[in-house]
Image (cartoon, rainbow, N blue to C red; front, side, top):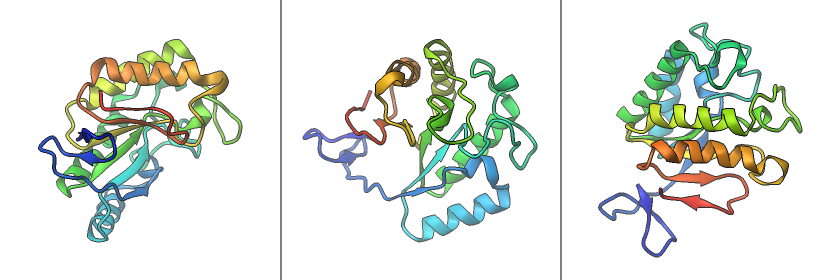
Length: 193
């Protein structure tokens, strides 16, 4: 997928238009067991959705409450040490979406892990570990065919934390040149790199 030549549309590599109809399944990786994942994804596919937006480090105590398989995303809440078992579960869900023809709008983290204006947090990111985590997660998903990166979630990408968001995005872009990347919610930047 890429941005069209006139910069107004999303298209597949062959130029075929892509209609982005997204559902916000933010807690998909954190809350649903595989039976629920199957039911949810099939429901959304049947309704014509093309993208499911979900976050790797979820909002509602996504660091300290285990997923349905009993794993948490990071060892000691350190972005430099992702837990392999947790991300294998994420892999299975992303692949299941692919089997159903759905893209995943993947947020590497929810905003409260960068800036705790509200939410549970804790704040765990700084410029250095955001870059490390960005490279790690970008490398993990660079070969998946149904990823659209979304950076930001419920926080603006600017302000005092702009350098952290940029480090996360640059980390991903340094290893994943194949996927579309968007900044949300501000919308001031986008990249097809």
